[in-house]
Length: 158
Length: 113
Image (cartoon, rainbow over all chains, first blue to last red; front, side, top):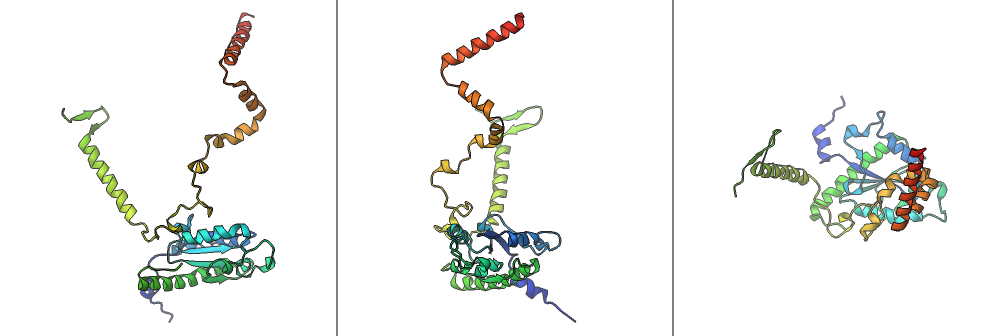
């Protein structure tokens, strides 16, 4: 019989993950899939996960798009405004590799050229289930970072 | 000078009651505030206002939204009439007096006819 140690599962999370979404030049396909997470079909808010309107409230940064030159500084600033610990989740092929925009004259990306990426969710666009899976993986990385912060007394180099 | 209670017919106002409710309100606000995050690093971007990822303008006027923005569509829709009105408002008193006399004359003619 499949048995889940719920105490252990819940013990991972001091609280649910909140994400801020930044479109760094996406075609909007991935953004639509992120918004689909909020619909009754996927309903990520049942896990307490939600999209927030400011990076200052966020634990995770969802980045879509291959990062155009115009967005580079803004993306860096948004990341810098997030409190520690924080994770970056790249949603879609464009943010991961540039995809069809690879080596375009107008790109500074992909995202890992700008920010330290923790989780990649591939797809063009990725299915909402894949994004949920990516966020679940990000929770584990976030927890690792939180423990590291506790060990170092809050000192970071982020 | 004595500090009394003011009865208004709808209730009363008393400085001690007011102070008590103020203190109660402040306590509730502080309780809510204490639940917020306090681990933002001072002097970094984490401590700065979020302005859509853009640098925060140092001049306050750049952050302000003029009141005319709220009726921008209205003035755009009737731009020809609006421009006429703006043109008429020259700020010169003699122009306004002329308009007043002209309007009064037109109304007088309409009434007399």
